[in-house]
Amino acid sequence: MTTPRRLWGNIQDLVPVYIIMLTIIAWNWHLQPDMFQLPNLTTLLVELAPYILAAMAQTLVMLLGGVDLSIGAMISLASTLVATHLGGHTPSLLVLLGVLAVTTALAAVTGVFISIFRLPAIVVTLATSFLWGGLALRTLETPGGTVTTDVVNWFTGDWGPLSRPSPLSW
Image: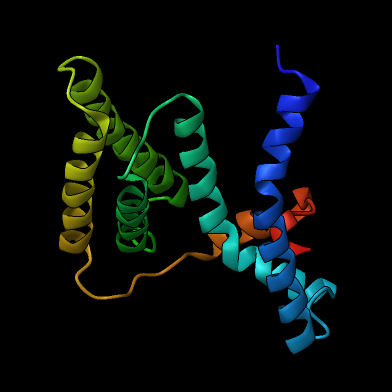
């Protein structure tokens, strides 16, 4: 059981982090006084959404006591697969499900090396990050790709008669 003194000690360790964070926010607010207006916050959240999702994925891994250095490369691979396969004759939902299946299978391969072969997670995930990054580079050597209107409509909540408010469209 955590005693109040021990809990307060953990909070005190974070005080410098909060001071630095508040200093950065205050400086940014000084440079951009309209920083906390709704359009700016919306743009900020939309721009940061991939990083937030990556941080959530890494947080889950770390809470379970592991480490995964290949999350960024896996995101790159998924992005390149989506960019190269959307806009063709394949339905967008099928492309997204296919990319989800491929990345899940690749993550399972990483998990097999760690859990069954008992290799260190840091070594396996570092090696697979190079593999997934190489596959991403091989898939799309230069920036490009398209996003179809049905994917944009899905993310913005414009589903025709079934429209709904979306956090990305606020």
